[in-house]
Length: 497
Image (cartoon, rainbow, N blue to C red; front, side, top):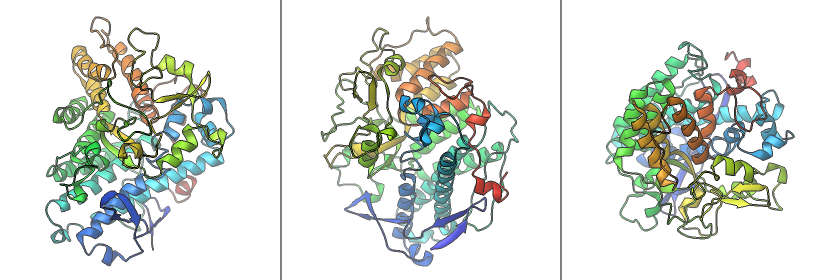
């Protein structure tokens, strides 16, 4: 075991070997822990670097990272999407819905999130530390893939920490506003807190370098095709579950939009869209039956990057089903009244929205007359259906939304927005009706809420736009005291402020 200090002197345990995972069952997704090993042995071969990289993705799949809290957990509670948590304040999520960051359990969960993200960053830096010196160990383009993905991981993790623990540019326009540390080295020395501008510059640098490295392998094999695909070397399979070159471009689109650079945001969003590597599910034929080998409730063909969560069934059963073995107060549900409003069921042509509660292949389970659970994470007994173990992090629809927001004209914006709407089987918007930027923003907001339920993206949208009031909220008027997560107590103790 190596004990290191992350950039703010908060102790992080990095298990070299125990936190690094090896391949088995001829699928990189089906990984098992290796035995503990030394740094010298771990990085004495290409396989050792590959194992370390896979270990990063496994850490990102943990429940206190993208495996739950940074998707359907904390962030959607904060966005007021679960009526169950708006109604009750007796548990951690109930307190989070009220932005009570002084609650002991809330403080603990935020501290765990912070520690997990920086621990994963440390593992990415551990890979990057000597990879250039070990370049001769690699065959083909694997050096570029491992280094590019490690850089992209470091950027993604820092960006989401920035979006959570720092004020948004709209709410705090001063570029020198302090944000978070940005760790670029595996070191015992604590790093300093940087300004938002400095963090964004380092993010851009990492992502641009990753983009150049990963450009050597632009292939996307599509998750759905891998069961029968035996022609690919295992390390290059399931590219949508890895930070591939298109995911890096999509991240750049996110970062530029966050920064207010609409020109580059549009440029990168269009590159992903125009690549035609990803496609919207067919709303007329897509199935969402949890027992089917072809069920695709998660819309996997649209995933630019998603996390493979091997024990997703345990979590989905616990939070999205009323089962005797799971505490009822942990259930995450909303009301049919909310859903009918959010998916505009009363508006002509909207009842068949494939995301909504009245769709023919609905992704909602109505428990009683008022209570509705989302079923996109339901896992059946068909072990060959990889789609049922995925949590989306970046989707194709977001690229269209970014392109719409960054467009120079309303007509161009509507052309992008309508691509998603028609794919979801609802009517296109008319330029004669949506004829002001304010009306366009209203439609974009509704799309974020419809498309990203239980995926965590609505909270980021609210915060980036600095909405002062959230719909269905029990948290009152919004400001930075609610939008900005407080630093963990341990970090303040060690001088991070």
